[in-house]
Length: 158
Image (cartoon, rainbow, N blue to C red):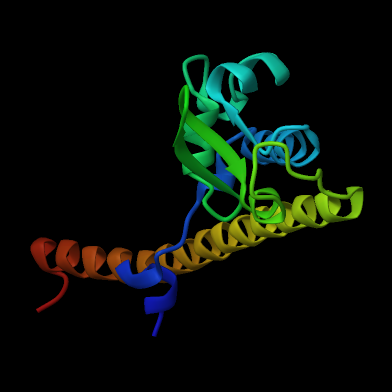
C-alpha cells in the first residue's frame, strides 16, 4: 500500500534537504547562466563564488555539487580538468562563449530548483507523519500485550 513512500524503487533524491543546498544550486545556476563562458573549472567557480559550496562543508567542491544535481548541470573533462556546464546554456551554443541566458530563463531555472526543494520537503513531512502515525498506532498494542503478560505472571489472568 505504501510502497511508493517506503519502497526501494522510489529512487528519489533528497539532495535539496541538505542545509544550504538550495542556495548553492541557485548560485551555480546564476553563474553558469550569466557568465560569458558556458562552462567553468573548479578553481574558476571558487573564485567567482568566493569559496566552496556551503552545503558540502569546507572541503566540498562545486564539481561534486554539480554531479549531485544532474537535473541542471553536467560535468565533463575539459582542457584543464573537470568542468561544469549548465545544461540549458550548453545547448544554446556549441562553443565556450555561447550566448548568456535571459533573466527570465534564469528565473525559470531558479523556480524549478525551488519547486524541487519544496517537493522534497513535502515528501519528508509526509514520511514523518506516516512514521509518527505508525508508532502511535503501535504503542497501545505493545502496552496492552505487555500488561497482559505481566498480569499473567502475577496470576491475575489465566
